[in-house]
Image (cartoon, rainbow, N blue to C red; front, side):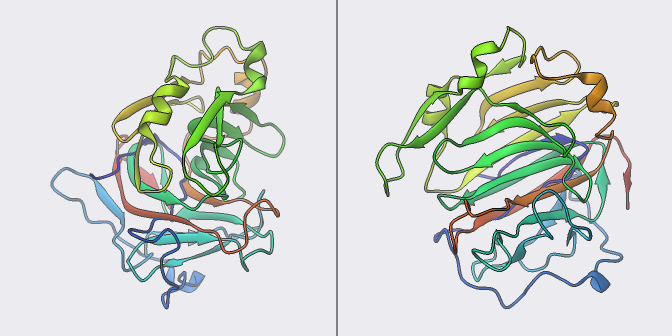
Length: 294
């Protein structure tokens, strides 16, 4: 099945690999900055645009300035044609973002992803090159989460994470969940909708490919973000109406924009296992506002 991700303006980072989570090493590394100019998109009949075709990275660039998680990470194409991200060099603690060359406002994004166990990753929306934007968790590790929302900026960050998962037995893919202790102070209305932990466990395939669809809409810096994984509705977050006690809409508007890059993340630090990767494929976007900018 093709992965879908619906998002309003932003940046996103992704990686994928078919049969082997680690894939092969690539002889086709990330294009250098001199090759970033002039990658034109071709619309398909359904008006979606392929952002990754399995053979080139023409629509992507590493961040050009140091950010929250490092200088950019290492990105390439595995032998099976999937896109991978890892620390640069592996095990160094240096991460960062792979960004779309274009910036987006309202859009739909489709992605298939297969993270190794252990990486802390994410899909960023409306982000700048430093990683200031909205994040969809792809934290595939003990006490992790996939598919919920985080506001990520250096001066101001807020986790909107209702539950977390961990492996039941070390080395085995089966997961268990528990409530995130920070939800103890949550009133009603943090999300307009969030699936149960039980529903997530029945949906997520921890050792296989998963399709994610993100819909991000809204003409201000406070988006509505809706997320589906493997056709199961995960959440609907409305930044204008969310009642999260640590979330300040006015403060948020000062640190994020109405559009930005889509970004795929490699997290910094020694929590990322040496040699681990996150894999992405089948990345498509449908622009909903009719405008993109370089």
